[in-house]
Image (cartoon, rainbow, N blue to C red; front, side, top):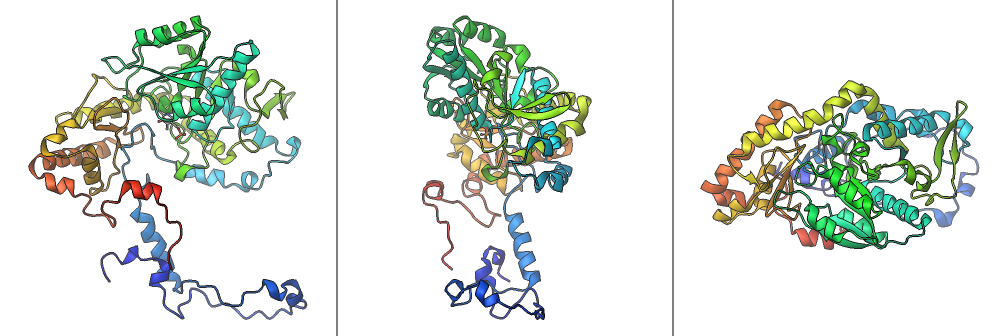
Length: 484
Ligand SMILES: *Cc1c(COP(=O)(O)O)cnc(C)c1O
């Protein structure tokens, strides 16, 4: 068999006459079948399906599944996105018929268990974050950002203020300015200081009575805790602006600090980051938002209620309305709920500590190679400055491609924008010391190759089915059907 035979499609592999099953002859009389399927709906020609044996089909898909990297196959040091282990028991629970056979239009009295689960998860997230009300409706972090900004605007409008500006640090994730723009705000960039944290003087100079909100990620995208967060919140509040915490990095805080206690008014959670639900190719996800009580009346509707032992639904007139069909992606909520219950208060309290320990341990092992731009200690992730690679005419993207050859995923690269040739690494708390040691060894080996045999790195990957793809063409020129 040629080495890359598994790269062929099923159509290319099929041979006429191969079958996976032997269909039994149907011996039950079927009167009127012809009438059920009028002639005009019947195929004139047999469909062009690949013809293979059952064994070939199974091998094809199993082999295909190993061509892609995923969290169940190997280490995934993807900074910012928190690719932590997805416990398999959650899948079993999310497939319980009592959950999967529900219909979103069922009367509340017939879905008490599902409503109770949502009600409890809202309270768990509130307790973990120090927020006073939570909506589970948004489908992802970015959708949570948009929802939160709509809530913030509704609050300002309720006070007779139509504020136009949202302030965002230059280290922010691209979804922050995108969400603010979609919500109709003008984005104003706040500079980072020499230490990688928000330049508070620059922030203060841009605060005015026209600022609706300041969006800040804490710990920020270079893995540093924003130590002046209380002063930042006070400054924003003094001009009536709301402070939004992008909670993508909440992993670092769980069990240690609560955004609500730090002074934030509103935040989002990424259940697929902090709460172990699968990332899954863009959806369906869940990006709840948490708010302080003054913003609660504006949260998306319907809201889950609990009175006299019964769960119900409420549609407050002050709400911004629904932001998702029905209740959001309910089965993601089931998984996150199972996770919090399984961890328990003590397990949850360990998350932040272990995430921070793992990141600092890993940086300690590799800092003899590439180094960070800003001084640590770091929270759950660190960002390396890849510019020394230029000495041998290499780039961060070459280094990342070479890591793929060793069976680990590439770190996030070229983000955040304030670090040149950035390489952002987050091991997460679910990786063992042995995995971190192994990754450090691979990393140092690729660093050695970068200096001593740069061509090996420049032309990587060498061990994968596909070598270098044309990134721009791959993104802009999608071919969604196979020519066969
Ligand atoms: C992942 C991420 C987001 C967006 O979250 P999605 O759930 O992917 O939409 C926003 N901000 C930061 C810092 C992130 O890492």
